[in-house]
Length: 69
Image (cartoon, rainbow, N blue to C red; front, side, top):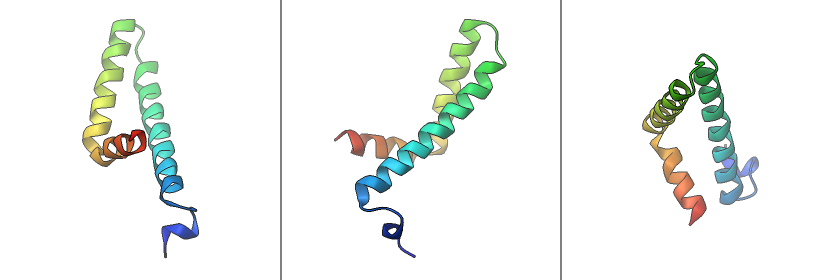
């Protein structure tokens, strides 16, 4: 099975991966910040969640850098 059955080219594959990652991190951030009332606690949760996400999935950060180049 080849990814090019589902994606026209490498760029479309990158964009799909980035879109999926954006949805995942947005969902995580929403879940942790919704439980906090204090804006400072929300900000701290947002930062911690973002750092955890990119630590767990370092390839996403590399994809972002490649997409910007």
